[in-house]
Structure formats: structure tokens, C-alpha cells
Amino acid sequence: MLKKLRNKLLIVNLISLTLVIAIAFSVIYISAYNRYQRETDAQLGDIPPSVLENAFLADQQPSPADPENENGENGGNNDDLMISGSMNLPVDYTKSFVLNLERDGSLSVFSQLELERDDYIKAAETAFNGDAGTGGIELAGHKWKYRVSGPGNMLGENYASAVVFLDVSDDQRSLRAILVSLIVIGLAAIGVILFVSLLTANRAIVPIEESIRKQRQFVADASHELKTPLAIIGANTEAARGAPDPEWWLTCIEEESERMNKLIESLLYLAKAQDTQMEHLPFDLAKAVTEETSRIDAVLFEKGVAMELFGTETELLVKSDKERLMQALLVLLDNAVKYTKRGGTVTVRVSSLRNNAQIAVENSGAFIEHSDLARVFDRFYRADKSRNSGTGGHGLGLAIAKEVMEQLGGDIKAESKRSADGGARNTFTITVPM
Image (cartoon, rainbow, N blue to C red):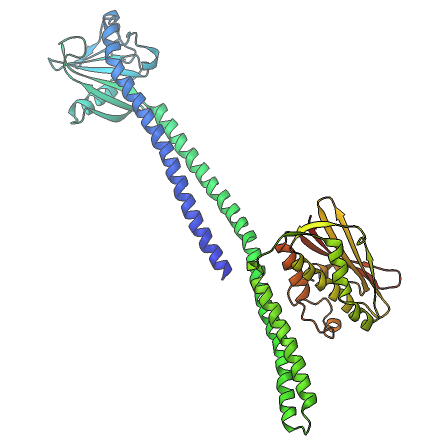
């Protein structure tokens, strides 16, 4: 399901970004195209005055473009086409020529280019026979753009009309280069975006998949934890019905009901933890820890476990929610006492580090593997199923402690070190801002 959702998001994201890139690059290309067009039109408009200004300097020598005129006569006039090749046009217009239609129907060309006579004739036929005043043509492997001027615009009233031709091959090549570059860059950008999006999407769904996995595991574990006391209650109920003295069976039912009630309360607390309001008020953490540890003296005596306190002699003021913080501490104390063997010791240390206060609860017990340490705060998780099954817990205590510390803006961590006697010293530390 997540992969399908990821693929749909990738497709939508890719299409959206492709459209954005296509629109952006289209605007760039159209802007470049319009700029070249404006420059070309400006050049076409500037050529006739230049021709007019320099026409009187023409010596009417035969043009190199007229291979048939080899008699040395001034000017070339063959088939009513006269070619002059000595115009002093500006440098910007050296790749241009002007074709004039005289009133008597003859043609004259001002050109510095080595074009064939047939090319000039083809240009004239294209320009004068067309309906549009501007257009394009291909001559001698080059792209040309032309503009037809009205009568009297070229050298007085002798000309019926004139056509200015400008070589735009370089502009066309530049536009093609821009187009190819934009396409290549666009495809490369889309490829990079696709790769980054895929990588990001894969990383983004990892926590979602993990959350779904934990949710499914949570439902399965909660169902299992509720199923066990319900099964016991059902069995005891059947036994009580046929027993002459059902008192013992009713006591078992009561115990299991209480156990199930505690489980439900823990689940409700975890469900409402995000909405719980924290009341941050200043209090003496050392004194609060001393009071909280004294409440489990009876449990310590019953289990045959000793307790040592360090750092509680000096006042340590913190500003936090005392009730919630002591709730997290009680979870650690209860956890430490449960897994400490008779004759063992539970050590509680209160200290300050920079702007944080720390409470470390250490007990002797079995070594906790590194892989288990990373999951001991997960709901219903038990590092040793066989060992923990007899402790009476559900694997929710440490999850509640972690939730409380996150709400307080603090932290909780676990550490396990092997000891010389073959056991281990397990330490759970909560850190809260002072």
C-alpha cells in the first residue's frame, strides 16, 4: 500500500516538476527567439539607409558573383540583372544584399557576397511574387530573411521596390544550440529530480512503515495481553460454578481483573499522553527522589533487595512537572526491583550536568544485549520473554517512562555492562532540563 502511494506521489511530483521545467525553459527559448527576431528586424530596417548613404560611392565594378561578366565593363547587366559589389556597408551587414526592382522591370543587386546569379534570381522571384512583405528563403546552404520596402525608399524614385536579404544562419544555429541545451539540461534535471525524489520517498516511508509495523505489533501484543487474563477469568468462572467453596476461584478472578484493569489504564495513558498538560513548577529534585524511594521500602524488604542513595543530601532545584517525573522514576525503580535477585542492590544517583539534572537507577541483573537495549522502551517489548513472563508486568512501564520524558522535554536511556561475577549492572538514566 505504501509503495503504491509512494509511486503515485512520485508520478504526480515528476509530472508537476516536468511541467514547471518545460514552461520555464519554453519561456527562456521564446525570449531568446524573440530577441533574435527583434535584432534581425532591426538590422533589416537599418540596411536601406546604409545602402542609400553609400550607393553614390559605388564604382559599378563587376561583382565576383557575376562569372559571366569578364569583359571589364563597368557594371554588369545581363538578363536585366545588374550586380554591384563595391558597396561600403557597415560590418554588421556584410552578410546581406539588397535587390532592387526598377520601374522599367529590370533588377539591380547591391551585394558583397559570392552568390550565383541564379541565387539572386531565385531570391527576387520569391520576394516579389509573394504576398507577404517579409519571409525566409534558403540560398547556397544558408538561411535568409528578407523584407520588401515600398517605392522611393531606395535611391530616390527610380526604384519601384527593394528587398533586403539578411543571412540569419548563425542565429538559427544559435537558437538550435539553445534548444538542444535546454532539452539536455531539462532531461538531466528531470533525471536528477526523479533520483532524488525516489531516494527521498524511500527514506520518508521508512518511519511510516516502522510506525505501521509497531502499530500492528502493538495491537497484536495488546490483544495477547488481554486474552490471557480473560481466558483465566473464564476458566476460574467455570470452576467456581461447580466448586462447593468458590471463594478461592473468585479471588483469582479478582486478581486477574485487577491485572487487566492496570493494563487498560496503561494503554489509555499512552493513548492520551500527547494531550496531557504538563505543569512545570520549581521543586527540590533531591528531596522528591528521597520521598519516592521511601515508598517502596516494603517491596524492597519483601524482595530482600537493598537500596543505596547518592546525591540526595544537597538541594537540587529543577522546574518541571514533579508528578510526571516521579511517575517515570517509579517505573525505573519498579523495573529495577523486579529484576534484581534477592540479596542484590539497587542504586539511585541524583546529579547535575551543565543545565540538566539526572537520575540514574542501577541494579544488578542479567546482561541486556545491545540489540535489546535499542528496543526496551518499545511497547510490550521484553528482552527475555521467559524471564519476564513471571514478573507480572506487561512491557509497558518503560514505554510510559519514555513518553513522560518526551513530554517533559527530557531524555531516557539504558545501559548494560557485564560484571566480574558473570552478571551485569544495568543502568537506566533520565535527564530533565533544570
